[in-house]
Length: 283
Image 1 (cartoon, rainbow, N blue to C red):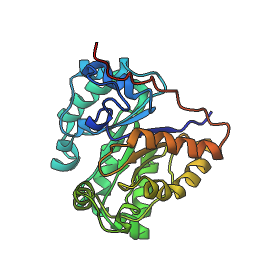
Image 2 (cartoon, helix red, strand yellow; image 1 turned 60 degrees about the horizontal axis):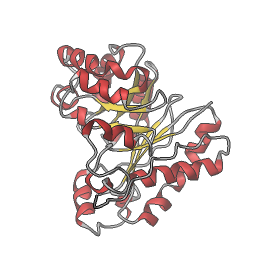
Image 3 (tube, rainbow, N blue to C red; image 1 turned 135 degrees about the vertical axis):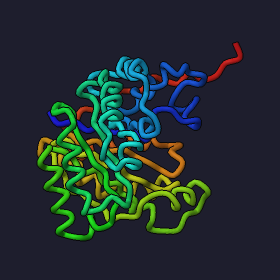
């Protein structure tokens, strides 16, 4: 049965305490509480440092078998070494995330300077990854999106190893100027690329960036509800990550997206009901 995974860029956020997650929750229980809201998460922290294997084991222990981790390969591999001469770093990383088992998707996010001439390097890197691990690649060089030959070149390289192309849809965000400090910060940092809605595998992964405005964010994801519903009808099991400039409402928005798709695909299982957040008391 096809499933829809939805999630956020992180599993803990200051604005969520007392709203989505209990206040003063120990670090070792935050992911479990988040997993009551969403059934997937982006592993962005692994981009900055490879975690200890024992730490990853606690992540596995706080989530059920249906939870999905899309874990980012460290920047020393993707941005500093550009996928070359990284055997030692990748062995350490793969050993660290092993406790996640088949719940993990290896996410290779490449810098904007990594272009069509580098596709052969990417192909060699992907072929060396363990066969049982899911692969997903995010590229930011404009030529991959606008040049037919470059698009085909990358799609063929990914198809050879059953890897997915991860689009980061920022088209709604960049449709009008920023109106807040959070939007201005995202405006300076996020990539401006065309929307891509083609899936290569049975497990597409999409990243979507909305606005501060909930209404604009929801209206902007309408094309994706159609695409994701179509994927589910084809038997694919997509993962959709909901971002906003401040991410304050992200868990609620992720669930709302799931509800919107489920209205179009009635056989889709609902998300679990989150545990109620206890109100603060004096005693």
